[in-house]
Amino acid sequence: ECITQRGNLILVKEDGTILDCLRRSWAGAGVERPLMPKQPYTPPPAQEKFAPLAHPRIGAPAISPTQLSLLLKAGGALWRLLVHQFAGVSPTLAREIAWRVTGQLEGATDEADAHVIIETMSALWRAVDTGEWQPGVWFVDGAVAGFAPYGVHGREQVAPMSLISAAVERYYNAPPAAAQQATAETRANSPEAAHDSYQVLRRTVTDLLDQAERRLQRQLRALAEDEPAEGEAATLRLQAEWLLALQSQITVGQQTLEVDLGDRTLTIPLADDKSAVQQAEQMFNRAAKLERAAQIIPERRAKLEEDLAYLGQLHLDLAQAENQPEIAAIQEELRAMGLLSTAPAAPSSRGGGAKVGGSQPHRYYSAEGFQIVVGRNARQNEQVTFDIAKAEDLWLHARGAPGSHVVIRCGGQAVSDDTLRMAAQLAAYHSKLAGEHAATVIVTPRRFVSRAPGGHPGQVLVRQEETLTVPAILPTELHG
Image (tube, rainbow, N blue to C red; front, side, top):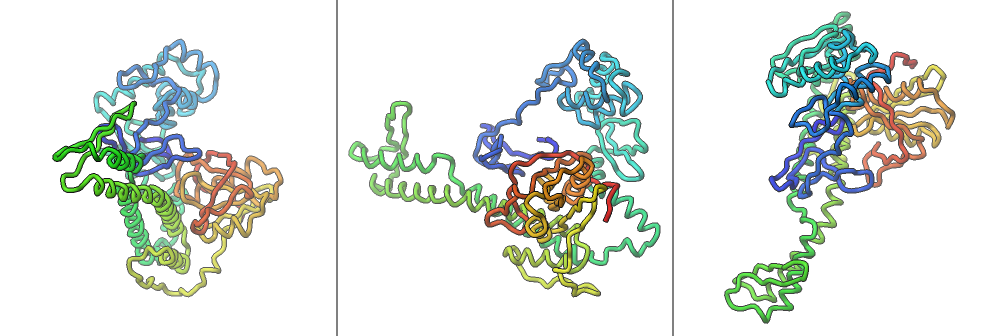
């Protein structure tokens, strides 16, 4: 399921039952589609949009030139209209269509003809049937800015790739544009400065984080295998009760006992080497174990999921760590979690010995004078949210991804859209979404943020949130 930030990979049996998935979601408040092993798979809700073309593999209705002509009268950028009105049309594809129709990536709707738009979309989608793809990446200011499986136009520089997989890898393995530019400037001015003096230590801790993640994933898979199916314990208990009640009707050599329940027939397999009483006792014991498992496994799974989420935060902390104590502190977090299979001493670096406690959150000021505080690791996130921020300050965080806690110290005063956007960009940039062109950031007053019960440092529960969508890059108007 390639669905923006909620993408997933789900393995489904022929009968539609989920075997496993990369991202699990458990039934509960705010969950539209529970996704977990042994549950029936349901597809994502359909978008109420037009299809980009009439095609038997696309269920949505195709649009007519007359309908499209009416939509074009709304005005504005053509690519925005295409994204909002057509299923399967991304901003990248929409801009390519706009360029081919109007000669400009930001071409307006009043410059476009409905028939030409439909013909252009059909031509681009024809590769689905013909396989004539033209994968490539493009650059902005020397940095990889995007990729596509079709030929793109109107870009500063385009590099064809042999496979779309190679294009995707080139894009996602590249650092954010700002980081690429900074790295290029650093190397130009001082080749020695580009060397990460903590490379060995980072690699050591990265390996430990990866090992811990694999360990937790194995434990989650084992839980999924042990988890009883819904109603399994109740069925066993019912079978045992009927087996005791009807034991006098069982004959020697009988293989099954069938009980008419009115709306259905209950079939009970019979054991050759046990009496009805012995088999019923065994079934009662098994049902009790399943009932205990049904209670314990969700609690254990929630804890493992919580630990996995925290490891994701520690990965980000490691990437943002600026000195040896900050990197070594991540290894100590793993040790405190009991996730170190061994206890290696962290490699030392020259000039080390700085106290971790000396590390402080970053502080910036918006143009209107509000202080914006950014935590750079899990411990600082805890400090920013629960020590520095007041109840009426605004709290921000990248949605659905590990990242920094960001606070606008406004004390309940109204803040401008520019300040809010600046803080949202800081939250997106200092997260796993860094470099994305459209990252979703949640914002809420600090009073609606509370510590997750039994959670790790920086893990919180958020209520009454609103969202902003911003590019995950550093804002240009930073004032330290």
